[in-house]
Image (cartoon, rainbow, N blue to C red):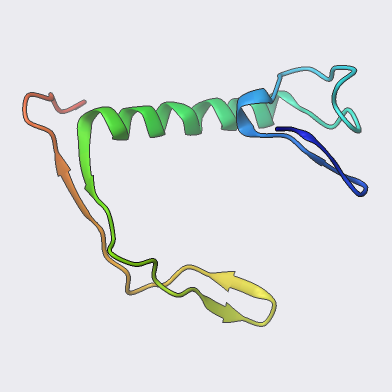
Length: 89
């Protein structure tokens, strides 16, 4: 899945490592990047195990501000805690 596209390195989150390897394109991997990737995976795992998320019927249209895409501010999703799960607090 990872590879080169022009001059840019494409690495999925699952293959980020804490230290540069010969496979990395420009040896730009850092421990901070690895930490963030790991934290995002843990948050996603927690959410999928403990909550039911209702899928949207259609994807909301994003807003453009100049050359920046901004997610829609009025979009709403429904999240419900699964029965039998315990609050982390």
